[in-house]
Image 1 (cartoon, rainbow, N blue to C red):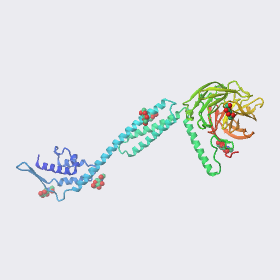
Image 2: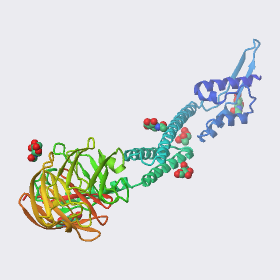
Image 3: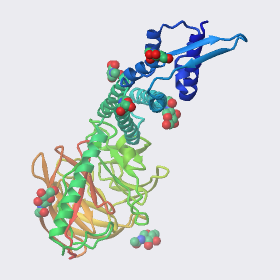
Image 4: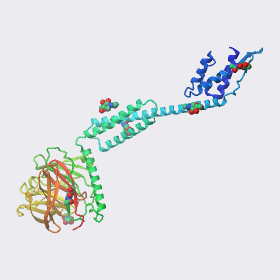
Length: 504
Ligand SMILES: *[C@@H]1O[C@H](CO)[C@@H](O)[C@H](O)[C@H]1NC(C)=O
Ligand SMILES: *[C@@H]1O[C@H](CO)[C@@H](O)[C@H](O)[C@H]1NC(C)=O
Ligand SMILES: *[C@@H]1O[C@H](CO)[C@@H](O)[C@H](O)[C@H]1NC(C)=O
Ligand SMILES: *[C@@H]1O[C@H](CO)[C@@H](O)[C@H](O)[C@H]1NC(C)=O
Ligand SMILES: *[C@@H]1O[C@H](CO)[C@@H](O)[C@H](O)[C@H]1NC(C)=O
Ligand SMILES: *[C@@H]1O[C@H](CO)[C@@H](O)[C@H](O)[C@H]1NC(C)=O
């Protein structure tokens, strides 16, 4: 090799030592036979990101090319370099060095970001697979999922959507994978929504609507309260510190009864125990399609279970009659088939613990309600306990109210009204006051009559009550919820009672 070339190499080596990066950027310099022009462009190409270096370095390498070299007798190589007038461009090299360093740092950062994204994406992919599996399970299975499942999945999908949007914002490189993920996530949330609408009875949607309405109602009430600060608070659940029923809410459709559309006759409600006022299970007792025989009933521990038709206990009895059923203290009270007897059934074991005759009571459609058969004997529960509403021949078909001892089913006291029972569509008791309804038309009922057993007073009311179907088959009151449970031609409805806040 020529000594002058060796000299150049040595120089380059020295330069390389000071700049670090240069060395690696010209890795095979010693092996190649670089022509001057090719070398300088080669040299530059590693730093192409800052073009402002190119011309200045080019001229530098030209001025450095004024050197001579020779080999002496001992074989030692000597170089002499004539530095041009300008001093060695230390500052520029340093700048170059710094820039290269910054660039490499930037590159490292980008690289680690990309690695991070790749990791994140693989996590998302796993999550997507997991969600897909769960959604598929839900698709196959029509009933075993709960509202909670939907909510959790929706939350997760929403979270992923948020993350993917963040990821997209910070991702500078190719986003095709991210775009695809985003589409899949969108797809997933659509699917979850579709699944929800597939929910057979629209139970969840309806409940949500009900909740929204209730919240609006509460807001309304709150704003009303601001204007009328003097009104006393509503009566405590289960208490009778109010002036009686003055209005009723719109009905909330809870659902179709569990036996289906053809089971138009029946009753439903919630067990009330004074010892555990808010712990009652829910019961649904549709009559057989003949509208007379009560054979099967169903219990649910919670309203959610009832709404989703899950965790039900089904029982059979032989037989009850009509839909005058009531439940108190974990016992179901029914008119026994083809008799004037009342039967008491233990809900823990479905055993008939006691049957007792209701003296003089008319039965078997003698004085049932208007448009409702086999309900001559209608049991009722209120804050004070168990009641029975019926008629006798002596009362000439007018309503008779008896307070019962729920342990023995003996009559404790009796009140005689002047209201003819067959012209009443149904009745319920609240705080010892009987309220009776009549049909105004196919869409509305009216609470039109009351009899107060506390005072013996009776009179007219005009509280309009909307209904979904034509016939109100039964009404049951729950003292803690202060709600009516209405069986409306197979549909289970709930109404909130509104009381006069001033006690009488
Ligand atoms: C390139 O280098 C010049 C001079 O050192 C500097 O002013 C400029 O900011 C650099 N440009 C980039 C893109 O780094
Ligand atoms: C090289 O150096 C010599 C003196 O040693 C000078 O005469 C000549 O002009 C220089 N060449 C360049 C290109 O700078
Ligand atoms: C999905 O993830 C949950 C926890 O996030 C886990 O319990 C479940 O087993 C996973 N399912 C599948 C199918 O991987
Ligand atoms: C979105 O879901 C539908 C079916 O629900 C499917 O046909 C389609 O391929 C999905 N799109 C993507 C991008 O996953
Ligand atoms: C009874 O409540 C309904 C709403 O459910 C309302 O429109 C009506 O005005 C109320 N009637 C009275 C007398 O407060
Ligand atoms: C109901 O009857 C039982 C048993 O005879 C008796 O112990 C209880 O005091 C009675 N309850 C009322 C409210 O009369």
